Length: 480
Image (tube, rainbow, N blue to C red):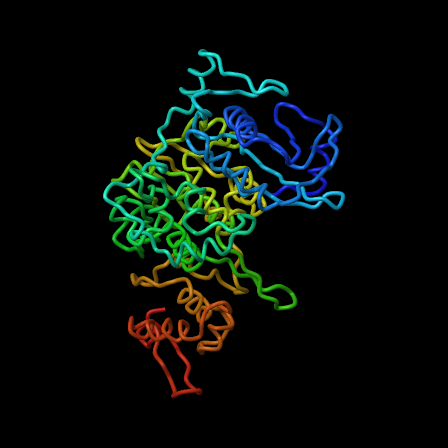
């Protein structure tokens, strides 16, 4: 996450400590790497380039691009490679200062030239055997994402996607796409040849599932509170960013909306769960799951009373159900960082506490967390037991939950049926009527939705062309 000018001044005012260090521009890469290692083995911290002296004098850096490259080279010299957010370049007192952030909860134990360091006060000191053993136990998971994928070459990556990603970054100087992937842990040199890591294949591969089975999302909407034969399912494969975008579209299409007309007849609506909370859980599941488990993928299941997001792999490192709100630990830092670079940063940055706040704002119960035999599940519950906002009516509108008279319908078709069911309302609906109910949907999609209801013998089309409209089939009217 970015540091504001006020936060930067606050860091300098409080001085150097175990979580804040600064250097002038003139320093050796090894000296910088030592501090990065010590902070990464502790609770993270912030390093400033262009600040010096006991009181934090702003001297600035002459070449910000070169300074950022020095930081990245220092991170690459660490074992395993330290994946950090792209350093910020800010102007302070008319001079350029580089901000390097080492997040809390790094996934590995880091070393520089075989030496394991820790931060003690203002010093970087060797980890004693007892503390080193403790840290290894806490962070004992192997870095699967950083391993080279067997039998792959750089041609297994989609370089058009790589170039788009590389062009979106700023502050990496004249780095080529290949160098950027190396710095981001997506390419590694093996036997003198660059080869993709699992992170690289998952983020940019042409066929990621060919190499990582189960690296996909299964999304389903069920009509009832349990799994049944009536459901809508979509399987999402491809790169992780592509999967997330398709899953977000699934959420928009298949989460129910509550609709309410106010005194001014303005139409207000909200999803049955806060959309940002649902997205946050989805992105976190993709970013933090255990990709070594190749027999299962992320599951997004929407039932009539709840939504479940299940990811392979139990909670990593020191994270437990009890401390999940406050603890931070990343199993896949390279994947997390690239997804952040790509614009998912807000969704990755909120955390569990943000999801809890969003649910409370919508007067819904707090999310539920549970570890399964080989995975982790988050459950959001909707307001089915409470009064839902409805369109004005003298009698309760039917609760369709994705099914009408035993036939599956999508949320837009559900809107059309509720519109026709209003007491005292119109008994006909046009393309324009449904378009006004679903303003963000393409007109061709609206046309297909109504035509599909005709095919399902729920509606009948009356009239031709611009004068056409839809009504319930006579059989349905007679059975009311």
